[in-house]
Length: 249
Image (cartoon, rainbow, N blue to C red; front, side, top):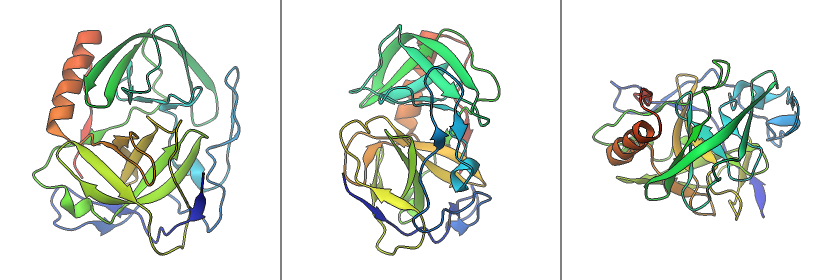
């Protein structure tokens, strides 16, 4: 696995009314060579100690890192994962809130959605101090996201920064920036599948992808109307009464 410093001169925000991405974010930029770790000390069985640097401003409490097969909250009871890299019903699912306090649930059901997307059901709702991530509200054209920055996670519980290379009707791909100023980049490898990527919109992390392929990364695009339709149907099949949260970019 190769790692190198990459550029992150600013975070971007795209409003629902603007024609071009605008630079703005309340999240702290990482220093050059700063640690990309989310946790200072991680524990599957107990509370964790969070990093005190820039990564503390990134709310990763809705991502379950206790196995390499990462799960990401999209409702209080539903998690998404890579369909080709699924956890099984009966598996323990561990989250840590922003203070590092441990929350455990059990995965009770998993079904395929479409493409490389699967959704799982937890045995009960998670508490409100865990983050449920919004998905991009559908729009006619996402091409203006090209060249903007995404926060990309990996199996070792770290955050990296890649540029969006292309956005298709159902998929999104990243690239490594050419200029190095902030943070780290990573070539995604086996075991990173299913880890989430986020766009930063008005200081909030919006779920845009879970990894299918390596390199700079690519996977299903969660702003896709078809993926959202199929995902909503699967959520209702597993447990009715829950809805996806959407955020305009």
